Image (cartoon, rainbow, N blue to C red; front, top):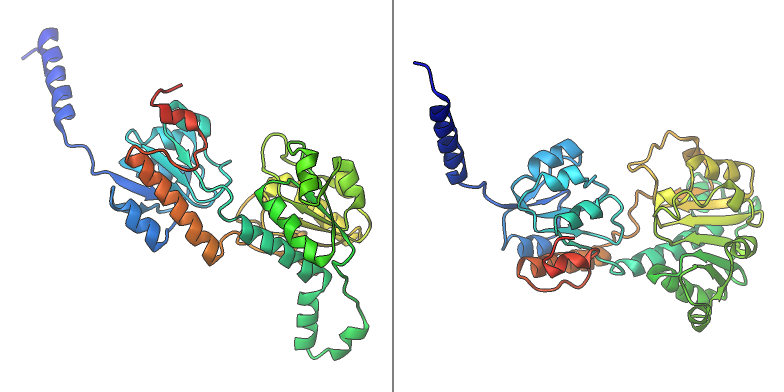
Amino acid sequence: MQVTLPALGHWQNALNESHRRLPMPSPIILATQVLDDYAESVLQTFAPLHIASNMQEATLCREIQPAIGLVVRGLAPITAAVIDAAPHLKVIGRTGVGYENIDIAAATRRGIPVVYTPGVGARAVAEATLGFMLALCKMITYWDSALKAGDWNSRYQAQGRDLDGKTLGIIGLGRIGKLVAEMARPFNMNVVAYDPYIDPALGASLGVNMLSMEAVLQQADFLTLHCPQNAETFGFINRQKLEMLKPGAYLINLARGGVIDSLDTVDALLRNGHLRGAALDVFNVEPCDTRHPLFQNSNLLVSPHSMATTLGAMTRIFKAMSDDMAAIFQGRPPESVVNPETLTGKKP
């Protein structure tokens, strides 16, 4: 029997109506990695918690579809495609201060708040900065390896250095930078800093002399990076700038890997001796490729972006993030949100 166009149209309308009556999938909260007990207990009052199978964009697009909340740990790519694959998404929670892997514009277009935890892990990172500085100049890993190999006479073949009387250069005097400056004072260090957004009077009140970028580089015995990674700072620590440091200076990066233009730069300056030592906790591509020649340098200390993830710091981070996600679910204002314009209920 030939189906007439009106009959076909009626059949299509009925099919569409049946689809609208199909039950929606049960809501979930998707996390890119495991959470702690507190965060799980808070979030699971709103929906069951699911851990993503992996952090690939295609996987996230598939698994986020029923999600009302998304927890972002690590550098999972939270692109516009991932966000738009979740029609019921109400909030994104970031366990940390950096959110460069989240498409904030896409979330904002959807009216989805992105909560995060600025400053919560700052003290852990500041402590690690001083720890790296001490480990480098006191040659702790060198002496440890030498003595374990039975080389007592290594003590006559090398000498460590001191923090006392040295100049610490800080790039970025935000929460972490300020704590590093405070922690450096008991070591009798002279502290200088570059941050174009900080009032020099505020720096002076912290005992920090605010200088130009060039002046900080020229004076620093230790250079530590604590600036955000954005369009302004991506790759701005390059070979030309690092060659302004005194020969034998130390470089520490616990900010973001992309602030340094390449691993090649650090490798070259370690090998020619311009840098006496370097410590890196962050890398532009993570996980990093440890086959790079840089990782063969004995005067390099590295860690897998782990200095902000101490037990105490992560306990505070998980609590702050999950409490703010709960606030969004309950219609209350969160403590820390990247895109506060989404809280008005009006999409831009």
